[in-house]
Length: 107
Length: 196
Image 1 (spheres, each protein chain N blue to C red):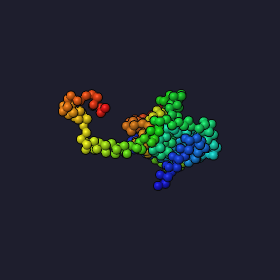
Image 2 (image 1 turned 60 degrees about the vertical axis):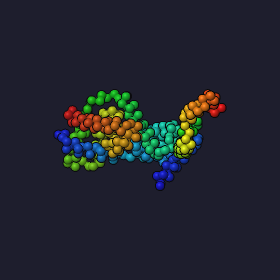
Image 3 (image 1 turned 120 degrees about the horizontal axis):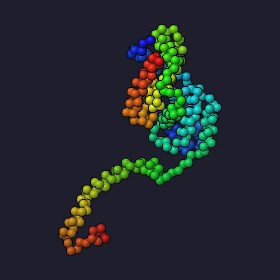
Image 4 (image 1 turned 120 degrees about the vertical axis):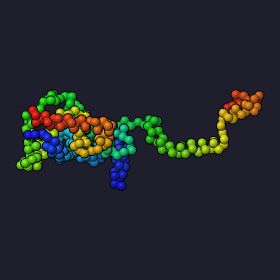
């Protein structure tokens, strides 16, 4: 028998059909009972909630609110014209004698 | 809407099991046993399907804490089933004693019968299916577990490469490459049955 392309395509289709029409399993009640018996013998799952897991579950829920807050604060700071380095430089140039390192952090 | 309700119900049951209600897992076993055994039977010989199906549910229970409540439970469970079948073939492959290259007279005769019955329809449809199934089983036994899984899922079952990749935990490119190679190997194996 020849094994040409035409024959092979036919054979492939037959094999695919045979594969898809495999015998379907019949589930018995005993099987289900055995599975549950095995699972019960394993005991309850070791449920632990670490802070990291809690953050993973709940932390992301606050992400949109945090983004909005960051945007609002940024807008507010830009509006106030608050640029710390520029402010410090201006103060030290305008009043060089009074300006000190203690003054810088606002103490 | 029903699919969403099902997912929510499954999630609730999973939460109960995690909280310590082991018996609640029985609802999931009852609900998905048919689906899981069908998935398993697609890849594993019928005689061993119940045992592998049992392992799938035990593995699912043991890894329930890793379940992310984002996707469906059925999809997650199907992935465990497919990977358990893959592990089954990996173990079988390691303990195999028959050389991969050996083709028996039985294989040749079986292939000739399937090809002859295609052309002359003398053999009944049921017999043809049975013989073709046996022949395919023998050919698949000669493939590596990776090639076998890719071929079965995409080429024989008709899943997309993306779906198969998701279930197997492989990249889509890997599935495509495996599929291409395994189809070539299958053809070579079947041709080998005729030549020997």
